[in-house]
Length: 338
Image 1: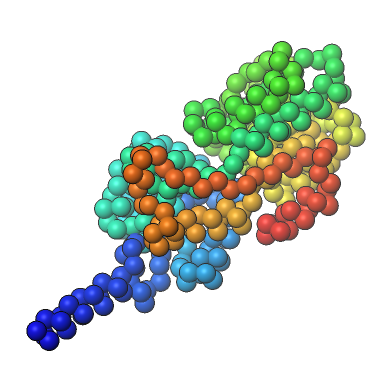
Image 2: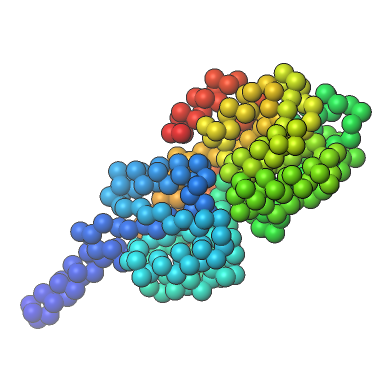
């Protein structure tokens, strides 16, 4: 009898030393942290924040998996989660259907899985998202208001540049931005979203072609800061991208992923980049780590019984030349660790 009890106790003790996610109590938890493009300053900053926070709070090590703005690379990264011995993964991919087998393989191997930006169904794992629609709408309203104020007799012609077929970009960025513009001027023309998701060089060519074929365009939503570098380069090459002491002349450009590069243009009264969505990398990176440990600790179900991913939204901010003082924008960047 005593021998039986001793064996049971030994089994229980051994079991208690293994955390969900595969790591033993005396081993460092390894976390795969996916970003869509590590050349983007926001993604660099959220990874750095996540890495520092995970070690300080949980004693966990975080590894960046760079998607390089390429859906195929993102899926290849997913296939490396199990072979590289990761215990947890927070995934950022562009193709929900294509990611499903890799996510299931990770779950079957005992890896804790969450996603970032894009909800995943079947299996419905938890997701951390940025609360983008409200900020996109607000920037659309501001862009239209300022254009009409400066150029009441020139019709608004707008375009979005980024990911026309990405569900979350569509619902969080270009659709609410367009709605914001139309709330000010229902007669505004929308040219739609042009695909330019391979970085600044691709975006530059897309914008050069756009202003050649449709020179009347005057509101541009460039949907990521690394794309906006190409947007502004193209506009300047075409003799545009200007304002007259903060008064719109050629166009108004709005962006996403406000960073130390964009602040120079936004607060230059002679540049047409005047708005950007501030995504806070510290809260985002830390939130993605906390999300994983909430799964491990039972605070969040690994797979939602409802079939709908449990969503955790992080705040976003409107950075505007017209409504935010430059000193406040600088402070925002400093607080966020840029």
